[in-house]
Image (tube, rainbow, N blue to C red):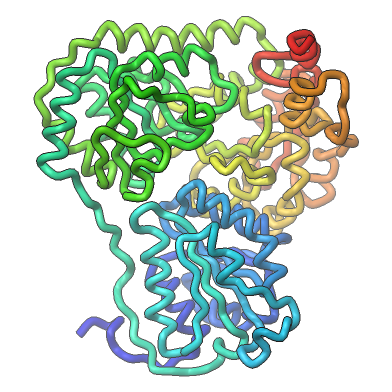
Length: 552
């Protein structure tokens, strides 16, 4: 009999930690709370797990989400009752929309106090139901291994996502005979022979096919299989929103990124196709340009591990429930002679031309991205916050290596820096850089102290234009000259970083930025590089005045 199957007399808290250990998860993120102190105590007694205590539950949840993306393991985050749960809900929502495996443990009021509006009481199962894969409150100590291990399995199988477990305060110190099973094993369904044959027939008739690749390719580690599939059949590949590193951007078949503020010619590539093969993408609002990307006259092959994703936005001509790697391996064996090589070459050139046209403007932000490209190690991992500043990253930084980009498809502000901390825990030997605007960075800047306290050497770049830039852009589009609520005060981020024990740089020019970045890469401390940004240059393609002129 396996060791895990031997009954062990443990408290519920000890059993929870045992489940985390079985999954080989080395870091647990939290803001401490009295309702789950026994769990923290059990972590103290388990040398293989380190507790990371954050300054805010939202920051802790973003750290966990970044860890999940960078490690491929389910992340674990803990908080207390309704108030802590509400604070970390933004990270749960991000994990849900980004399909990131996460298990959330929330302390709950004593079982005898439930339903009386006890101190900080919230019905956590109902609260988190719409933004999680599964919610459960554990009532019986003997069921802790069963339900917690089920939670880990649910979080990482099918379409990954967050699972929320409510822990009544009186449960945690109760003992029972606990029986554990092995760590979760992720199923890898594959296409049927009929489905492979149908796709083969569709490609035989296609004249202008394209591939849209999303996070499912990354989750299954299928980047090499995607390259082989695309190369075998000369298929243009576009990456879904904020999945830039799913396919090498310098590959002759890469045709661009379907995201916010992208060049119109990239969208034309998809709309001009007669056949679209969507792999591991839910065809989100942003990827599909407000659900306007595909037309009725196009043939859609949609491959995803989650059956509920198929047909949610566009009904597929062939819908396949499959792991991306398994599907790509089988599709590479079909017999199709490409007759669209000229189409593929032309769409690649359209992508190249679109970036060259914008490059002629040579803004400071563009030069900064070029410096990052030239100075960072080839395997550096970049995270980004929400905001218009990310447009320069998305347009000009070439993600030529897999697993080098992590961004929130949920569009959550405050994500970039705490996510970078989680990434660094998952990949300690790699350079990790976050990019944020001043609005987003200020939302979770307190986690810089967490970085200092745990000696997490990440580089945080803050583009400071003293405004909520994205909202200001939309404000000027719809209500030109009538700015309200979008201006911000001047925050000395570099000086605050130094006060918190990090290293701070304030730069105004690309040359100063390059000097600061070079120094940052050789220190073992968190670094903040504050970039004074021109508020007039509101986006990659437009100034505020240009937007106003177009609105007249």
